[in-house]
Each structure stands twice: as C-alpha cells, then as structure tokens.
Image (cartoon, rainbow, N blue to C red; front, top):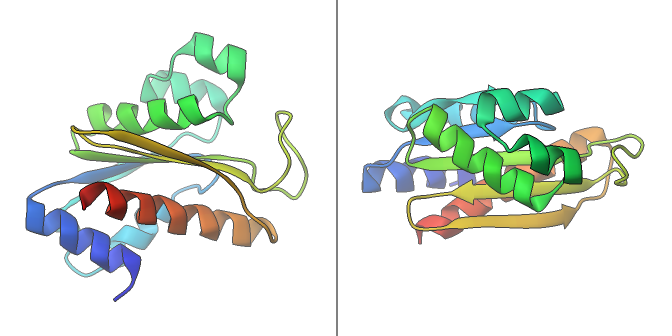
Length: 154
C-alpha cells in the first residue's frame, strides 16, 4: 500500500477530512490523493497559490511575514496549512512551498522545500533540501508532506 492510500485510509477511519495548499507542487498533492479510490470521502480540495500574493489573499498568510521572510519559509508553510484548513473547512491541512528549480529563487537554492501539516492538535513542518531535477524535487515534496501527515495521525 502506498503512502497516499495509507493517508486516505487513516483519514477515513478517523472520520477526518483533508485539504492541500500548494505552491511548488502546483496541485500534485491533491492529484496524488484523488488517485486513491474513495478519496472523495476525505479530500475537501486544494488551493494552488503559486504566486506570493495569493498565499496572503487565498490562504490568509500574514502579509508582514511574507514581506519579511518571503514565500520560502517554515512559518509560511505552517500558515498555509492552517489557512487551507480554515478556508476549505478541513480537519487536516497540508502545505508545500519552496524552490523546485532549475535555479535559485527568493535567495534559496533549488531543492529547498518546506512542507507542513496542520491539525486541531498540532502543527508540524519540515525544511528539506531535495536533490534532482525540478520533477524530482516536486515529487519529493509530495512524498514528504504525505509522510508528515501520516505521522501526525499516529
């Protein structure tokens, strides 16, 4: 069983729902989840906030935080996860932000990724440096946010 299936099953067994806030993954987290049969029982949806201003307007990330730290920051990832939980009325919020590459952006090297999970009982986040090309970085971000969500449900 893959991690997406495990996450959908874990959410279903607990009667919880999930939503994703995605930047560098551009919808891949939600796509991975809805590939699982029966995902409609738990997946509320996703907000792809690729542009920095959308992180504030759609996900309620504090504009002062974005101005001070930029979009590639652990506190931004946490705020995105909390924001999508609230906006899409989900129990669990997932978030991805970072630099997929091929070059650096916002003062961070390619492969710098932040993933976060927000639940009613905790907010967790990871700062990662992933190798490989753009596709590998994005796929790695999806894998890690799903793993982090599974860990939050244990």
